[in-house]
Amino acid sequence: MAKTESQEKIAEKIEAALLKKATGYLSREITKEYQINEGESVLVKKKVALKNIPPDITAAKLLMEAFNRAEKDMDSMTDKELIDEKIRLINLLKEGELLNES
Image (cartoon, rainbow, N blue to C red; front, side, top):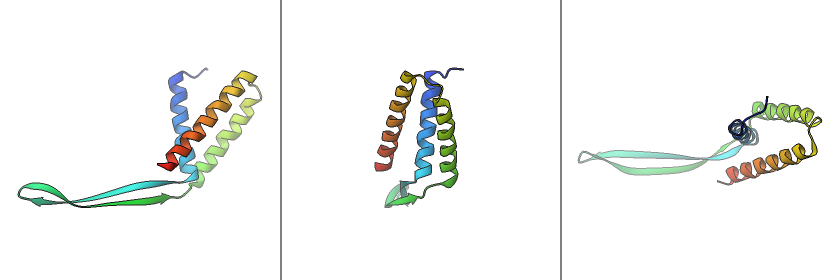
């Protein structure tokens, strides 16, 4: 069964999220405190913290299993399909790098 374009995009987003979780990332956490002043809430304190999310071993295992399945599937791919897959994976890695930078 061939995947539709939207199914492939969803699969790529899931793979990117799994890669991010498997390799760890930084998350920005914002805490705001408000106070009621003359019937209106007023922001009195805002705290921004960077939180390090460590790599997740379960996500890494799932990713490795997916790569192993993909490797077996690649044996039956044509040269054009292999090139397309290579480009897709390179773009996925670039997206992951961009996500880790922000």
